[in-house]
Length: 263
Ligand code: ACM
Image 1 (cartoon, rainbow, N blue to C red):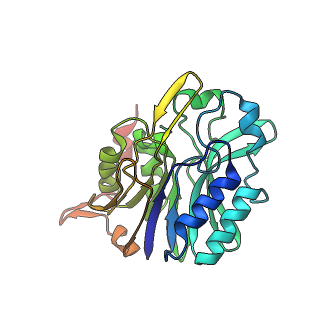
Image 2 (cartoon, rainbow, N blue to C red; image 1 turned 45 degrees about the vertical axis):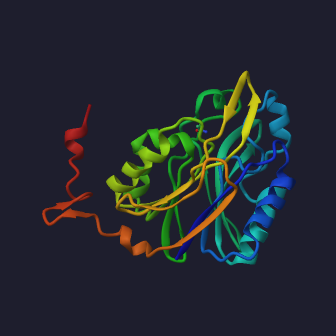
Image 3 (cartoon, rainbow, N blue to C red; image 1 turned 180 degrees about the vertical axis):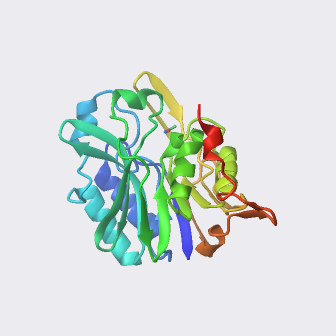
């Protein structure tokens, strides 16, 4: 299975422009699963929630960004996972959608909101769903979810073989921490970060790039630079994530002791 990420700098407030960037960036490439950054449709910081609301769209795939992404997925006969701003009635969610040639396969709403995201978004309320593409079990988490090991663990316990992880990282620790998330769950992970800078909401943020793909043993299979626009695709066997054996005497999941974890 060819899996990858596209690291780029989304245009602020311009979903149509970002669709074009994504289409151009992926043109001519072959992949089965590709992950894009968090909020790749809109950019990240908004002083006015109403400005973001106008360019947000429903999770059912009827809006222009997810429709366009579905067309790109159709061209590549692939699954694409992207962050987008989801609108539901008066609420906004910082969400990720997985689309294939037929439309939306699954939507995840970010559970652990970071810092000023709380001014714009409601927190995700539907847990961590898994879905299948090419008979491989996939899960999504978004950016700051990395710091809560329960996110990756919940997905792995549900059978996820690959963590799709759209991100807009501004702190320095995620790329290193994800080695542990992959290793402790014996699972592939694709962290798709963005580049560039934004200001708003009384903040000036630099996004840290260094998107990466990790194996179930925590090995770095691909990594982008800090500032580069970069498409990276690697060939993997998703079945490598199914064996949870850590030593002759240890199976990571069978050896868990939930009764001992009670508070
Ligand atoms: C983040 O969750 N975007 C840092």
